Image (cartoon, rainbow, N blue to C red; front, side, top):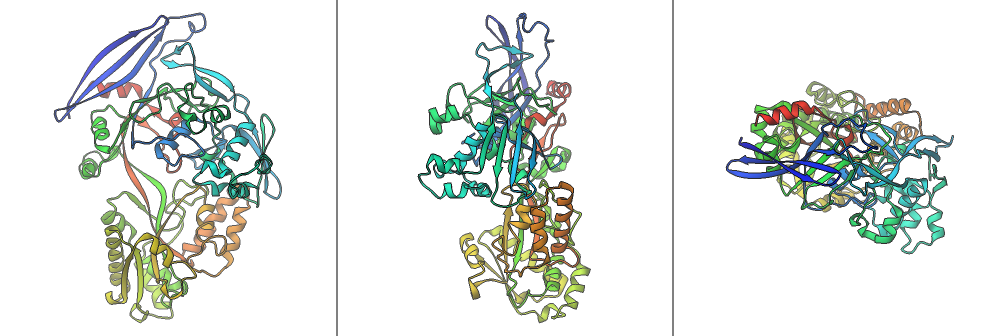
Length: 595
């Protein structure tokens, strides 16, 4: 593994003494130097003398990639979204453990009877902050200086900014649910009156009102997105797109930066001492190191200098065999599936579609194709989504006996009597391997002849074009596609992907009772009732009598490595929430001392 050398460097100031630990980690003859803030001790003053000194708890992380954009209305960068989640307050918060929406800036809300008018009552004790100008440190943590409260006007500014075309918000279409937003997005030069016509209004400093174009219970989930994290209007107006790099950056979240947010240096975040909400974790300081690839981070994790690390593919087999308890699979709310053409002579019958789904061993796909970096899915909505069923609660999944039964009772009676059909997949080698394995399962479990099944490959754009409903004869019988959350709510899955008229409905599935239930769920405000409705919808789609418009295959993910002293729930959608991470600091120090 290597050797860890410790050296202490004392840096004195008139009012503080900073103790920094530099860890020189030697791995395979190569030295890596990691500098970490361990303790900062204050000379007691009347303001701080009563504070008992303690060791700050540090979380040591790595970020991969070069670009960082922490603009909530513009970023698509994973690192940027992580920082937004921790540096800027959200209107609401998505709890990654319970998959429910919780208060954050909004402490409560109410909805009109028609589901179109939402009023949020905001806290008055969340502030725009920056590190204290005097460098005051208590218990090793920089103290925050309040600039001013975060107000309803800040939220109005953020939503109006996102709706403007000039901002170029990547997922702005999600906000078209708000009255007037789509119209402003379509106008290259909206007037102040156009912006004021957007359905978001500050009734006073702590009361915010939204007007929607239609009833939408899932709007509450949308308010937890990073788009709903306000930005400081003063800085944006003064510095434009460069506001993030402005000296004295204002932030409003549970942490604040005390070093530059640039990927060529170490970034250090400190707990926001003015944050009024409880930290369910115990992290005081977040140290972030930047790497171009996973291997240096993995080596530092092996040396116990990082708490979390990505797992390089080349090291996966060895690590999983030696320390599987340290590997954590985090799914990412991207589900891959096979879509059926309901106009196909082969797949017009539900019994046939059920049979072909039940004949696929999804766990075998995960094992052989995806090196266990995925979870089998037998219904559509993946883990970590509001109102989603448990992953093994609904749906048939792999069931060869059921598959043969359904095929036998279909109008064909036997796979050999089904007309030849085409499965269209993308041009990647992985897609071809998966398609061939699925074909072999259909041959093995259903008695199909290999020559009945043609596997075609095309570029992704061609696949999308050839699976539109209006293409006609060019449409294949089945195709490979995937869907990822735009917002983590069941409506974004069964509604936006599968509804007969409210989605693209690439399958050209006729409307039925399930579509009425999907709309009912979209307008149901009671969380328990919503969850029950979505369970019923998933059962009607993928249960024993399901319609099976698609065959869910798996939800993809990636393996992270964690140390034994760290406990946290990883984010399957949105940014990591470092204020929920809990570190056994005593165990961490003990384990590191053994290096």
